Image (tube, rainbow, N blue to C red):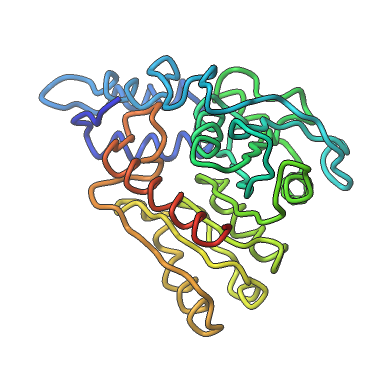
Length: 293
């Protein structure tokens, strides 16, 4: 889905909604009070709601990949067990590995599609479902967001740390592993970079929360930080994060994509920017190829 001429006030309203500051009813109620050309902006608000019927980038039955769901132990997590979507390139392997980390709403179709795209590029990819301990992604993002917010957050992070360890040690993996994540998942990439040290060889956080400055000395993985140009909530964290990365001589690159907003890689909403999404993904894959080969 291409970008639409959506009023900036609706983008700002949606950012609050998708990060849990209001429910869907309140989102549309506030949007109805905004007029553009004398018309209520509810249509613009609707255009930002995720719609997975718009398609995917890699077909479920693509002959270049093999996909399955797997369960594995997660000691110290929310239930002691996790479930994820494991996708490998066709062939025997082993392959370099990429953990694909979802947003703040569980393993939705967009993130599964991203895992398939990573496999097409030659990586064995695992996309864990942080909602697995409470029944899994419920089929819609609103309920998924509510469920994820209700989880024990430190245990949720442990579930993703255990997922990374599971993937790294998997028989299909060479043991060389990177991680990519979006929004909440981007912040989780930074968390893994802190917690995993040299076990993580490359991190690609998309518009994710920065690691705390006091934790930056523990980061060993090179980072490719993918940022939207119009994303004040995340971008305001950057100066402090960058200062810490520089102080401790960490390897990083930050790319800010013009005319983009938070979530620009996600094809299911009106924030999607096809050109910048494809450009950023190509650079992410090249980064993984460099550091995981």
